[in-house]
Amino acid sequence: MEINGRSLVTGVMGYPVSHSLSPVFQNAAFSHMGLNFVYVPFEVAPLDLGSALEAVRVLNIRGINLTIPHKIEASKYLDGVSEESGILGVVNTVINENGRLLGDITDGKGFIRSITEDGGFEPEGARVMLMGAGGSSYAISGALVNRGIRSLFICNRTENNSLRLKKHLSEKIGFNKVSIIPFRDRNRFDFKGEVDLLVNTTSIGMKPGDLPVIDEDKIPGLRFVYDIVYNRVTELIGASRKNRIPCLGGISMLVYQGAVSFELWTGKKAPVEVMKKSLPSVE
Image (cartoon, rainbow, N blue to C red; front, side):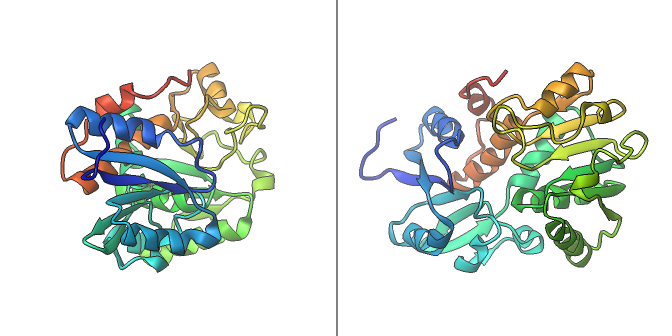
């Protein structure tokens, strides 16, 4: 990859962001396609998000991904958002169209492609337990509802955030088959016969030594387990494999949501297999 005066800059804003693998696979994709683009990480504290996004406009940066903790707050600094972002209330991709900043959300699309294509699991008709109620949860729950799930349980450490997500799904999408499970009661809940798909969208599992998001004895009987943590094999994924429950870690979703961003910025189909192969194994 040669960077010159005509190179178009893209990147990711988060806090922290040094762990991000997005620069690895996005730059591999640009290089493979022969595109004069470069993708870099920008560590942006929450209070600086507005200034950072204004810099995207001023510096003519072509596009930005947004990760924790910026997905919910970003829209207030943009000139417009996609219909999906407006409904879900989250943005993870910014496209700079001649100085006009437009927001979109690719997490939901990436999740559905990941779980169906790489995981071989069809969510339609499934009963889902969603661990977490942050930015990614809005996109993933919205995508699952649109895919036709039967019901949704939400379990989050801050119960008010669970209630906020439940209200959001009711008011914005018209989905009312939502129940709240207090986080302290998660291991008292009878998963067997009540939940088909477990999705962890929390940060639990990112660090070695993290306690499993649920006890291992809750995993048998599930049809599929998905953990969006991607930097390591989490205790949840390890326990699922031990119990021979089909499961998938977050690398797959990371690539697919990044592929959608790539296509929004370049107008070209993303080389998904190249992107996957560029990443280190976390096995």
